Length: 625
Ligand code: GYE
Image 1 (cartoon, rainbow, N blue to C red):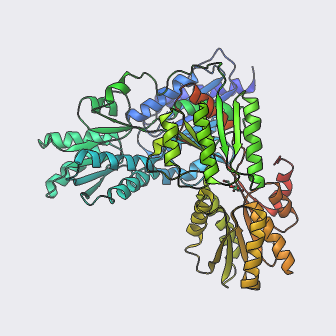
Image 2: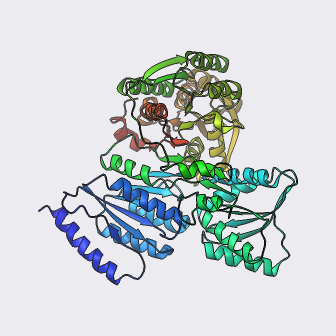
Image 3: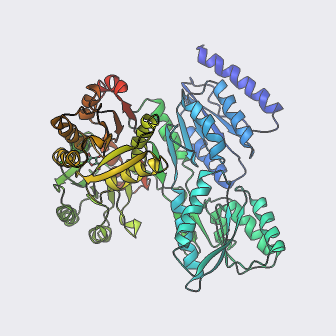
């Protein structure tokens, strides 16, 4: 009998003893004793009282039951963060191969999750942690939920508006902060709406009831609507108002679980007015856990699941649905994907195009790829052509953030879903696009700046930075600038003395750097290039000027293509931030799932790293672009 089986049996025996003695924490191990166990997955949940957490547990159990070679160990921290930390330590002692964890207190739990991640894959589920020390986050966009709640508030209160009480989750929970920020930033747009009071109820029903009763007892409040960050607290709000005989006040919650006291039931029973289905991600977590354990290299960093507003008008249709997405009807019919590529401006773009073409071949997708040569009008024409051609799915990398409403409205009217590849857009109506697959450019900008901060801390002198920006008004240029500036704004000695648009090309990058050298000469300490091609152009200009790139003037860049690795290895580039161009496989998977009528995530954010000169030499051997 293999060592692992013996260890597992001993572990199980201890678990059962622990369970019998344990007051907190419920241990549950799925038993496939007759099968050979290849992997052990530990699951840590903060509680099993919230309907949303119970749904997550059931989804995980249901999906896990399909894998007889995987043993699952479930723990329940019974609302105690301290207990959850203990649970994770216990799971580590049983040599788990992967941890799936849902947190309530992001701040408290971030360090322990980071330490597990040092040697064990971690899937963070539903509620975020700080930073990026995990394998994969599957959850929803909590800022967006807050915005959706604000729009529902506006709808419910009409033009007269009114007073609002906000009932927040756990203060130190990222999702509570993001929901509140999304809610308040939208509410602030309407003069008729005013948040008169804020309560904190830690996601708990009874605390929400108690806090609201206390507020009515101590103050002269007269709310028209209460927004609670989850349905459990929304039910507590209802109980408080009901006990005070207040029937007219509107209540908005979130989670939308189809369970007793779950949001769907609460809307159906007119106990609350609106909720937002917030998928737990349990099913996707299991699917990705299996891929991670199989050493799949195409694992994204974040999967943002779609939320749906549920109110009296549509609650019955959601109650009728038995699963969160129709069963996968894998049709043999080939999917036709029309892809409008932005151009050929850089090495990154070439790698991106190659990835799309290769993945289409591998996935047997009928790819119609056309190139807009960095011209938005041309890109719109190409998309219009795909609509006339009646392709199944349209994909494109938007050259710039604005100007897409008209053509995307035509695609929507034609019933053709749209995948945003690589770059996002800014439109009022987000239903004009179906999913975004690409990077977090703001984080890339932060990572680039962090190197400058770390490497210039010693010098007390002013550090003068030249920024070479990508295509004006494109998402990567806007966001990389934002992320970089966020990171240096509190560093007194760091300053961007000029920002010049190099349009992501080597030639323009060189031209802009020549101009900067003529204007600032040896005052320039650092060049921050939004992509490798512009960085290479800058390196050429610096050498032409008689200075040493990487020495006299530090150069940092984003993309991390093989041009960057060569420059890192020769010392001409100091730091490279990766932006993953290999989006082809995820684009094809999304296109096929859309063709099958499946609901797909609203965003898939790729996983990326950073590279110093020392790391480049080792990494170069693994790169194929
Ligand atoms: O950084 C650059 C390309 O949109 C992320 O566009 C992409 C950017 C990339 O031209 O090289």
